[in-house]
Length: 305
Image (cartoon, rainbow, N blue to C red; front, side, top):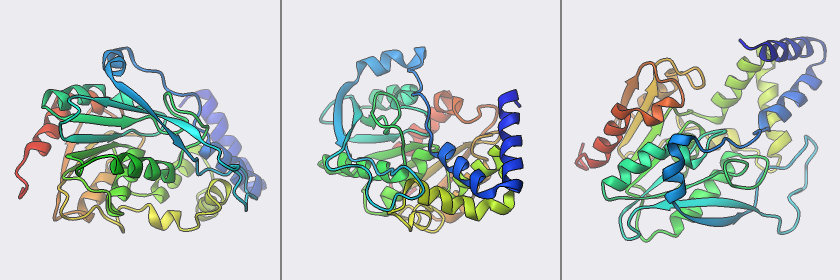
């Protein structure tokens, strides 16, 4: 464990015992902090540069501070969201939704596979990620952007592919009516609760503060959305059964444990498959040849499969 991470864990552990309100507030502020955008990897640069680019004016959902009872976004405040498109403009479209501290170009190898199969690919950099503006991101932001991109399509998505946090946002969008013929979730989260629980463990916040931390996180960033924990739960609010789903997860994923996709598969048992890899972790899985082949096979499988 890096030295700075050990210090952070020790600090939260001590504050959690001696000054719980301070630990919760500092933890919530840290939880919402995205950090500097990830750069485009050299291997993904050709795909990134070849995209047809656009932009959406997005109203962010984050409201800074634990006492933010009124809408603090300001009248008409927007941030630009970068969008990308590859492939034949008339071809069936696949939507890609990236994860936390990632960007659309992280799907570079998958974009090449999909366009090579005659599909059109649509993606975006979430707020505070990649080339998009803003400082924060929540699943509510992704829901709004996914709906707007979906409304611009003349037909359902041929498929939606999500990675990490993008799996949760895309899955909820499908549950709430966004139409797609297929869904693939890579290294996915089951719920917002799973995300905050993971943060509590990683940060060293005492586990007995778990429920209070979840409440603080919501009040700190999304005070106008009290039902966000219930809404963002793919175990209780599943992807529609008529959408064949492929879950892909590495057995050694340290960011999102493999058991999360096991639970997702169980919750979608009648309509999903689980494909497990080893040795790829959380991010390398996106470029693995076997994973890419499995995604293409899933898209090409008969509708009754």
